[in-house]
Image (tube, rainbow, N blue to C red; front, top):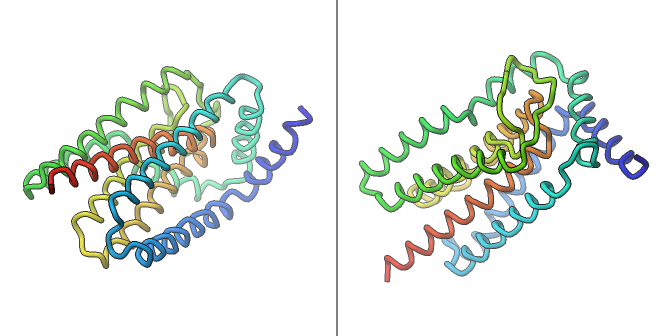
Length: 260
């Protein structure tokens, strides 16, 4: 327990300042997105070379897989990860007020399976109608692939959810990794990719800022509502980012092959 105490205490501190940390991390992510976008534009112009895009995709895939594997290896009753997760959940129960839970309870529906399925159908139909069949195929593969991957991973690890959900939600099924988090990063990340492909450059940064804000908020909402542990959300982001990177990189390579 001695080795666990510093992390558990940090989790308690984070739970007591959860809303402040949420807004601080969101601001940091948005600023980082702006800085990264400007740096990439300065380095590579309006469009990065294929090699750079492939390298970035491969790095994201490897990093996402590594984070997921590390978290999965630490799962286990009474382990350090479980103690830290539980400490955060217990503290959130006492520190987050009802109005904030109502807001997160509304925002979390942006990652609901029904929301993402509806979004998937609408976007696919619009892309086909616009004659963008290649993009439509990539979109469908990304959405369906994650829709199969996440439930499979849940069954493999079989982690139970927190025992004290809030916000009027009653979730069933296993907890690790978070389906809302992986679904949000794949669906809204793919929308960001489509925006980069189809919209004029002036809309690229606003689109990516919207993606970052949506994905982070959906993931955070799962912890605030206590239907997932924090590590479930991070694992969902990691698995979703790895799958998204694989899909986008494959689409970019296929695009280059078709243009030859």
